[in-house]
Amino acid sequence: MATTPTTRVTALARRYRVDIDTGVYPASQYQELMGKAEVKLIEELRTEGDEAYEDNGAAREQVTGYNWRLEIKLFHSKNAAGTALDTVHRFLRTKFEAAKLNGAQAGEFGVRWYDKDGLDDGNSKEGRAYVKAFPPDGGNPGALDMISLVIQGQGPLAAITNPNATTVPAVTGLSPAGGSTAGGNLVQVYGSKFTGASAVKFGATNATNYTVVNDTLIVATAPAATAGAKDVTVTTPGGTSPNTAADDYTYA
Image (cartoon, rainbow, N blue to C red):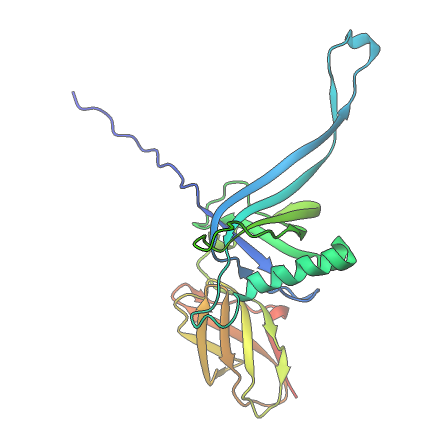
């Protein structure tokens, strides 16, 4: 008699993507945090003793809130030429210095995490945070340049729809968000699902040229256009990004 094959597939431990919001509020410019060797997503309940005389000495606790944080082992990374730090790593270091000198609120930024494969596992979350620790590991000359990064939550976590649940690209921010009608501006287009992009348009006009830096960032040269707001769209095999207020590029 034949045995029944299993249908269970175990999820890999390294399945979470972490994005850092490098934009200036209220704009949102999420970029993927690269170089992660280890990620711990920690949510802890905060409790206080709630024991009463009638409990006869048995402990009792009451939940009064919760804390959350990300503990990440991060390979400190440079560009291919070795002349500059990874832009997101640099952003986090700058935010750490801001919090150290001026308090946690001065160093706050948005962070989100979700399953890379788009699974709805109930743990796609987003919140405000600051860098609580940025210590380098390894003291000997041959050690890898690794950082034990701690991103400490500030305030509540919010459940989000997994951005990878759809294959359609999305534009979530532009920097700069406007320029001359003559065109020629280098524009950083932030969003998701950019891999395989076949077109970047400003209104109905193709970008003069563009480079897909990674799945969340495209650098495009704005074409010439008439004055006014134009929707910046990205087209991939998954479709064309929908129109939102975040994708408006204003020519003047």
